[in-house]
Image 1 (cartoon, rainbow, N blue to C red):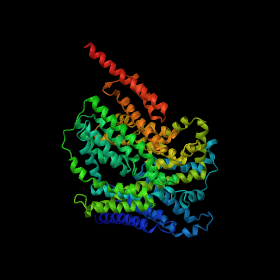
Image 2: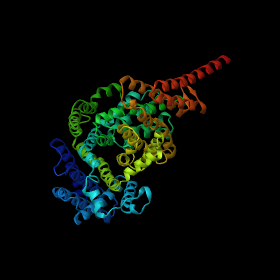
Image 3: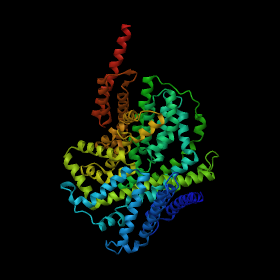
Image 4: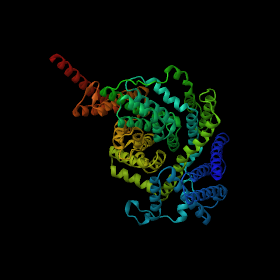
Length: 618
């Protein structure tokens, strides 16, 4: 018992050191000798292995393994900092000690990955490791000269192309500050305010609880960075409300799953992977957020309109439950100050993302301390420390673990061959290349968290798109979107499965309906590749026209999903006309827009005339 209490204190101390370390380096600068990444990863591995060692029911032998791996990883990471100066003059020479400690760190990372990211990523990493050593025995496309163990350790442990590459740098330098922001907002109660605000505004309108789920998940999901965490955080309240209002179990779960998934594509924060995307592209984050804004609005508009159409179709009215007072909620609108501050500081100043995150956290702490309800107590502060470390662990471990894959890809040249192979297979058919890219993105996204899936796709697939002439911004957003919405894509729709558990619904049916609710997210990426107005690129009137026509197109998609147009149930043939109208309106251009509008108006007047004839006959 004493040992367990001591370990709990060590876990808390580690989380405090972790947060203070990142606040300190954000203000005074990164550690010398490239120590930022090893210290960042080391503190998180200490936190993870200590936390796992005191889990109830854990056998003594596994607790001992956790402690051994923790100590080994700390030694391996400390060793890199110590020999940093020596590495600059070695000229690629690998010593026996490098191989021993590199092996220990890789094993520790694989175990950590299995604990917090999932066994699927471990399997993928092991496949790449095997490929690195045995690729010389493979024929044709996959053949390469093969690795020696020295080369493998150099690529993954010593160089900055492996574990300590761009991804871990992003996690250690600025992603962590937005995880801290999310922890402050959640522990202080500001995160709950977003849900209550949505309830007060939309709770009393037609199909209100489902619309609350859409808006609340949009607001909360932008900060949380995890669709499953978003489902649990907001779905606990919204799903029971939807069911009591008359929504079917599977539809209620699908609404929450689809809306929670979209949080990662909604500015200003877009979860955390977006900061990594901006870094990979070498562009200001605010430019990426601006490009993602219109597609994110269209995605949520599609879910919102589908919910409204479903409510009309099934006669679902307002909620009878007691809801927060809208006027009282609007009095607390100042709780949006951190997000507004973040947008302004990124848009109108030249400070780094890291400093922007630091200052936003300071402003947020000051703001929550002014209100009695959100004021930080001793327990809330403790929660912020622990929540920050716990939420950062999966991100940092995924970034470091994917670095092993990146090292193998770089060393074997596989990335260039896959990119060239996709381009050759597609020939001059851009649509075929995009479709193949979508399939690869969805498959990887089903088994990996967003950050890990994006990193693998950015190395393997994105170059194929850019080689075909797609702009880097459009290409990276394309793979990011499909990596994200894979969580509502059957057969492995993880967000839908989590929501189905809360709703008491069939997971397969929930996943299928979440997929249908998210249908615009499967079409919009194809549109912006061919015409970038939806990314805010072009003259303002072209962007505005593209956004408005796309919004009408999304409405047509929503109607086709529910087989219900305006106030009429429609046949499968009319559903086909609506899909055709939607595609015409989604594709920017006067001709396609007019074609889509003509089809839509013809369908509308057809039903009006039919109603008039029916009335006349009566």
